[in-house]
Image 1 (tube, helix red, strand yellow):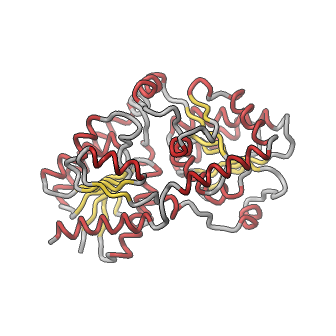
Image 2: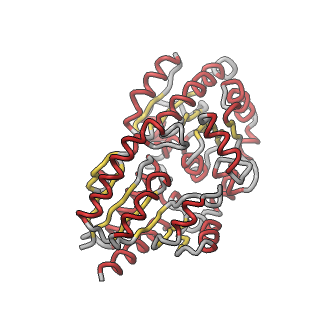
Image 3: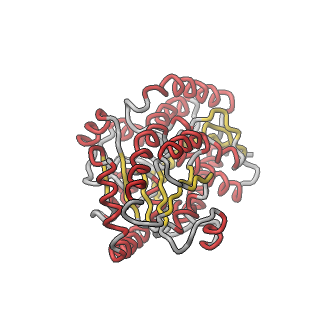
Length: 380
């Protein structure tokens, strides 16, 4: 029997870990899974020893209040490594937390696999550059990522992007409209304020105010918010109620809503690439603490922050960042797209080209084989 330990602290990491676990079970049904993560990992059969997805952060200042909890969970994970002695430790995204587990795992001679490794291609990361040579296997999700890690001396393999397997609707379009009492003849805008507490706090009020003012310009627009993590639903419902506009708030079904949306307004992150996979035109927003923004402006190598634009190497989706993440700019961008069907169609064509660069389907299964190979090698 294989014992596999996983560590994820983001909602997206929890999702990718859950799909990886399911793929590993198909190859090695007797595998046992433990680790830190969230609801989706537990549903996939992981014995979740610490729930972490409510603490997802991006930036030093934004994550400050979670540092005591992260330290406590880090110590717990180190203790689990000693007690459980897993055959492999899988790190999923969450660079600031997960890199702290590499050293204790290597001391115990436990192999480490990094899935969704830190984005060396986006900014200079000395800590990850050093750690990459000590990690047993890095699973790259972009081809250019594989080339860069190889230059660093890492053992890396590109398996393709798992969203090609994951980002798929569960229902036919007609079923979605009927289930959520939506009119297929009227435009639908899905609002995705992110999967972190501070993103919801900063972005959702702006989105709702823009939606309220849009209603004065365009009649019969419908709005929906598919909740990324149930832990944030109450906060979202409070903000929606305060806004005074009608919004369908749903538990999950994010891909079903993207699939029927005329337009998606989303926080920068995984959701932008998910929308691209579902051929959904979008506007990307983000607002960070001013300290984080300044650091990012200095360190990040790209002129864009959204993955569709980075992969395309040009601006194909609007980005409203920091000082432009305001209601008036969002309203203007929404009007420009909704009043110009040809712009929406052009964006869809560009997004198809982006998706074509993500590699062939089956990435999750290929990643699962890598994990099993590393774990069984250690077992032998």
